[in-house]
Image (cartoon, rainbow over all chains, first blue to last red):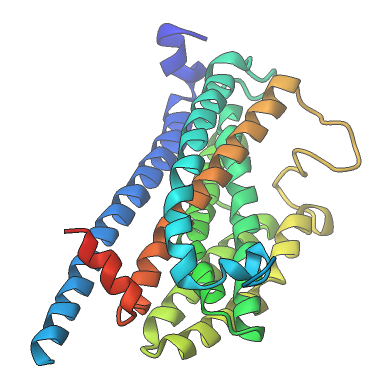
Length: 56
Length: 249
């Protein structure tokens, strides 16, 4: 299957591409969320350590 | 083994598993991306349209793998939660917590893609039949495990409560799997049966298996990345975490 027929999906384009699009979007979103969480966690834990050092 | 026992016990501590998980991530991410691309090519381009369903059946290539992963990840999560409850290894409970969101994600994907397949084929987005309802219950179980863990401040009590819920909920998995046999449902039977030759073409079968492997490898990546975050959060007062965090400016 190539070209316009590929995107047309035999008339089922709405269903097929909604299924594939949301799946791909959610997986990308999870990866982005995990990378942001890692940055946030490292920043927060670093701040906790700095506060601990000042008190000591 | 001279010291520290076998490979399992050696990496059962968060301090040892943290760098290991980090090193493993690219080895799962690269084949996940490659197999995902191959699976999409097979399912969307190579495989011919179905003689009855036309091109709508192509949703199967993500629907079936996502549904399998939703059940498989739940069982994996429950096993980790069970080990955490019985043996009280912290890393097991952390792994259970790390798997839950990805399991919930694949459950949602299975429901969503099923809905967008059901609409053109059955004429409805949703029916309250056994297969669909038990899969929805699975989503609520995942969300319940996540919410329960988040609601309790003390990590150990959070592990116990959410672990118990995860274990109890495991009875739902065989219900999902066998629902199409036990009850008269709108949902079709198992796509691939253990005791019968596959009812579909080889290319379709391979596309499903390749996509399943891609989703599975992806789940490792997500769980490893998430468990690394959980480890740093929970062990933040440990000396080794201080070193790890300070070395990343």
